[in-house]
Image (tube, rainbow, N blue to C red; front, top):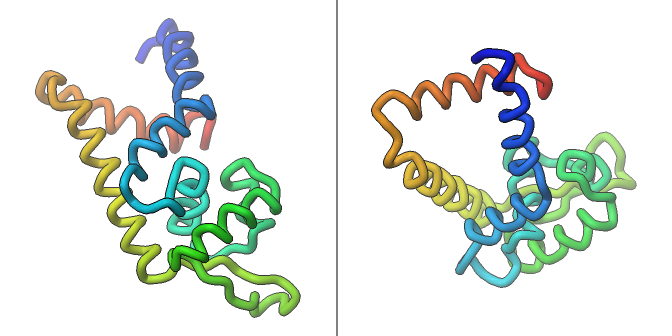
Length: 147
């Protein structure tokens, strides 16, 4: 890409990074998955799938919430059987949030839904353009300003 594309990329990233954009997507993905799984709890479940067991304090920066915000959302997920708390072996005073088997299945379904949504969005793109976009996006995230 040429450097003159940078402002257009910055504008597009601004849309993607907006909290309202993410919440709308998370709401679409979690629709019909039960009252505990929604646009507010999705980031906690998704982050645990990416990072593995974490304390609420450790998970907070990953999803842009403070410890108490993570704890409130994790409690809803725990009550639904999607997350459990375990003692932290490194600090017996702390507890780790851990995905349960139903939580893992929920994450798999959410990932399937996201992949389907993306595939549907790219269905009308010319052949090869989606693959080129995927390669460029991967490179941008691994080598660009977010690396």
